[in-house]
Image (tube, rainbow, N blue to C red; front, side, top):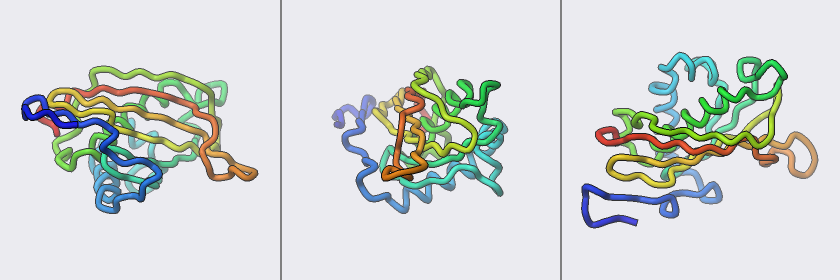
Length: 182
């Protein structure tokens, strides 16, 4: 929905893509480029998602305000008990929230804003070698704040659901201050 007052213009996720819709090649190219040039300039993202020349993340879908990516968990993603580390999950929510904003608006070349709130709920776990699917989705972008939602699922390895989403591992929300960014 849009408000006629340009200073408080708002758009919400029902207007944006869904994973069931076909991926937009222009947006997919944009977020891939943004990820490679902006996200991986951060040492923590480069460590967790792979350096630009050996990326661990694979983008599978992008549409307005939405992207999907897959990643196989490696040792740097794990806690001492062998499950995905809570701080890694929170970092994924931070990364995916920003990237969803980049998928929402191509002007993100200035950046996707600064974090003002991150919330992560740990619903289950994943271990070394498990593939996870990360979904970053814009819920709303206003003139000052952007609200995103991030979900991470284990990908099923066997049976009739092989390659499909399995148990949800993480559910998160990420709010960013975007005034002057998008």
